[in-house]
Length: 278
Image (cartoon, rainbow, N blue to C red; front, side):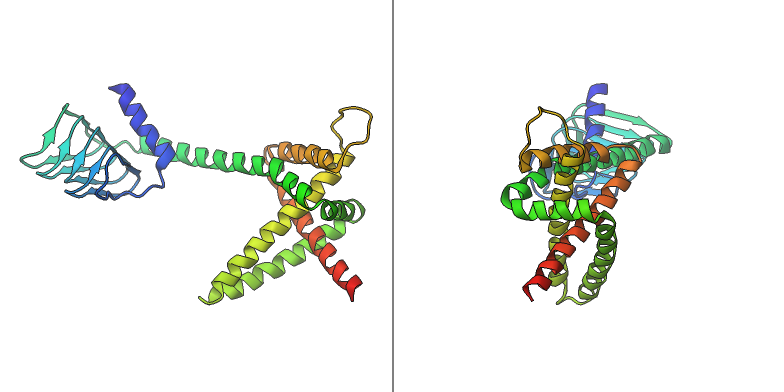
């Protein structure tokens, strides 16, 4: 029974952002931190709620686990396994079916709810950190493969004018932010704002590809004495940048500074080409 309780509570760590109201569907887990209602025509697998009241009028194939919340079971409720209530009241109407009984401890357990909430936030931040690390290691390689000349030009800008790239990146980023904000105010301008946001992300990733190539040349990972290709240099730089991002505290600052310089390098390249064409 203890194992089942831990497994059910673990659902909160994986699905705390899922909806907390059931629809007429089968084998759906309901997890959350808010008040939850399972209607009479719904069939769900498990119900796991922390800090919210639960009303069940439908069928639950496995168990109901509620921490720091009250549980009300309507006459039509059908729970195949157990109802577990930790820190709340339980109200049952006549006609309720509970297959394996009730486990209830009264009183409130704010500490348990806090631990689960904090753990959920930690896992979310860890997932974001993993996604950013993988993105830093992989995305620059795609730009190098598809836009080799552009990456070389951006790498040259970063190596020759890093301070200029940072200044241009700050000014350009602020300008684009205010432009997107102005467009986002109106309903008609929201698609334009989203389009500009996508362009901004692509520009930053393209610039990061140039930074990775420059870093790969300045701080090479030794393979042998031969000259390496553009792709290998970018690969070395992307791995180094991904590792630098995972340095506590300083890693976030390094990534922010790199993104600013990346945007600045792209803007410098864009306006330089435009000036030369004129």
